[in-house]
Figure 1 (spheres, rainbow, N blue to C red):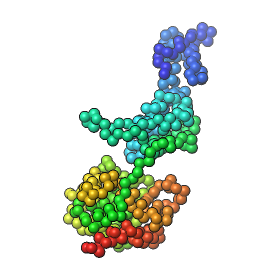
Figure 2 (cartoon, rainbow, N blue to C red; figure 1 turned 90 degrees about the vertical axis):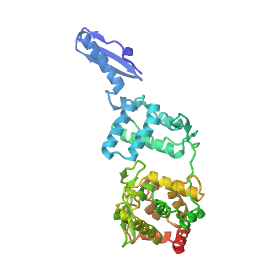
Figure 3 (cartoon, rainbow, N blue to C red; figure 1 turned 30 degrees about the horizontal axis):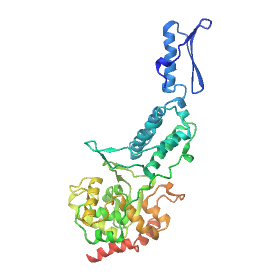
Figure 4 (cartoon, helix red, strand yellow; figure 1 turned 120 degrees about the vertical axis):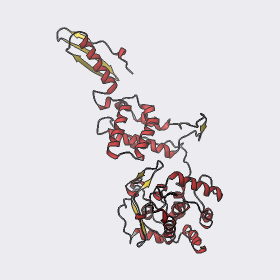
Length: 386
């Protein structure tokens, strides 16, 4: 990188009465001139040259990636506000993109450069307070690398029309085949039977049961409010989520907003929860013990207790309950119904079937199909036992 001392000295042209500084960088020649006489004009030439090198004053493509990415984050935040996506763009961008290519000029970044971010990315050690490592891994997972790739593609989509980059590498950069796929822990039917037939009386236990029977995201379960439940029609509307930082969001994607028709088993869980917490007069269905907004940390603690008490697989988490639901129901449901229930992004596959679903249509069909699955038969045995 050029420093001030490395910049050539301007030359005074007696005939034209101006200072001229000529420099070539990466095969491109640029001239800077000043008609200010003596040393002030000479310094002006050098300062203009240094500014061009460092800040890309000759065009957006000449800016360093670090500066361009910062502008990208600023524009994204202005447009979308503070959400989980921008947290990921900031974090992964800083750790893997800027650390690798931050000093390169945008228009000099090649396909191979972008690919090197993915091919050479390594896990960053997590340290305890005493400095020792925990959760050590040798390779980043396929999903994690996919998220890094998403940051690259998002930046390039933003930068292409603004002249920061010359191409979008989305079709040419890839996740290495050697990247491991981290499996998702799921509950077997015998495990689910323990949960439903031997309840422990935990505060968030019904939230766990609801997630098993609906496949809702943990934040969506906790984000349910009393006003979302329509007892007359037997439906519930998903329209918000509580993230891991305790912030209420509008959900993971635009299709996260949806209405579900509930089976008798799920309605029973909600009715029991509302009855038990009625004295708290809370707006939240799965409120805290004092009626305030629930937290994902409390839900995680509940799942840990259930796992320990029922001797369940130790890789079960609140989010893996969503995978449990999918694993035990997808064989009984067509793709369009699965997408109706799960609130998947349109990018999940080529279908574009989202929008407001009729209560008398797909939502009701989903409830009917679910009610005859082995998963629901287990929950039903709990109802009959009572």
